[in-house]
Image 1 (cartoon, helix red, strand yellow):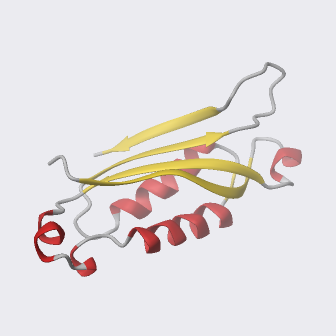
Image 2: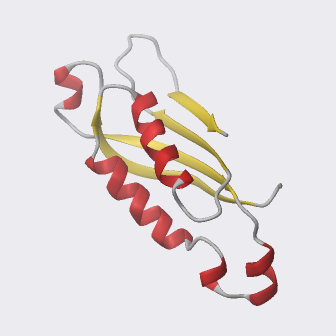
Length: 118
């Protein structure tokens, strides 16, 4: 199946970092999610009940990520993938979590993790 709902560039403040100091202050994470599910009924019936309401999805993701205190981006991505896969009819998910200002000496745009489940 190639149908999917895609969320790109969701900015969420979160406490994530290996060190206590890094976790002590919130930082912006950039979140992307692709959820595979059939969109045939929604395309045919034009009913929000036949799909995932992306407004609700974004609010849930913001709360989940913003409330998580994690050491690793991998942990945050795992929490997001577990949540999305728990939604009705979602068969596959890709989650990307990026940190724009990682605590490294080198200049870089961001670091990210991407996980795919089933």
